[in-house]
Image 1 (tube, rainbow, N blue to C red):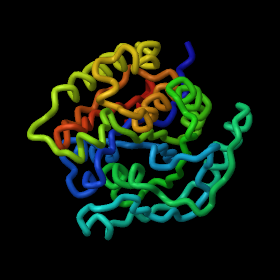
Image 2 (cartoon, helix red, strand yellow):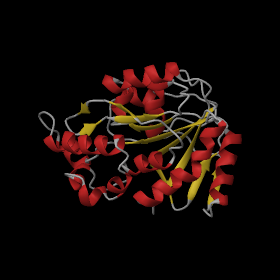
Image 3 (cartoon, rainbow, N blue to C red):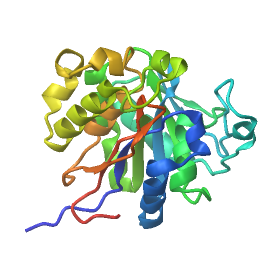
Image 4 (cartoon, rainbow, N blue to C red):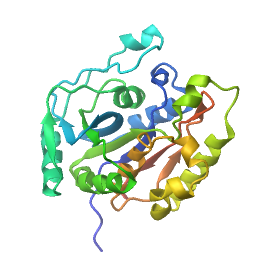
Length: 268
């Protein structure tokens, strides 16, 4: 009987608000534990809704800058830096896979890391031990095409590239700006539905989440921060069941719950 070859882990991370960088909370500790346990990962491919383009672009920066792409937050956030090496060779391999799948993709050698990338990485790998590159999200992306994109880049995991899809379990900016006194009920209702569907691998239901999930429109008035989950779902290989990472709820409306997949021989 043949043992499946090992491959790098896969994650969906809820990156929350930029203040997550300074307030690690429950999820920050868990990400630190995961980072300390990583073995054999050669590079990290990260997808974030804070880099959207008309066609797919792949970061080929040798030393990506830290982008502070947010406004009106505490000054200490703007002083944070995440120095890390890029992963040019793996980025070029990603472009090759995308083109082989019939997708237009091009290199971008000036792009830096947006906060959807460097904020969670600061908790998981604070010293920038593993090279990082990003893949942009096409503005035309929907759940099915996001799933297909995940399938296209999945082979990178066999080369030792960890795929991290950074988004948010819930993301209602209007509720965030208004502020709430305590957790809004819809947040846990929606998050619990998603967790059950992911754990039971109900992919068809997840793809149709806007029609079947409770409070989907309230949890995600637009789905840009939820689409990374579908990229992660598409990038599964012969993984064991996902591990649900309970992250708590920030500001009453941002569920920080996340997921981790690893191969059967487990590198974590």
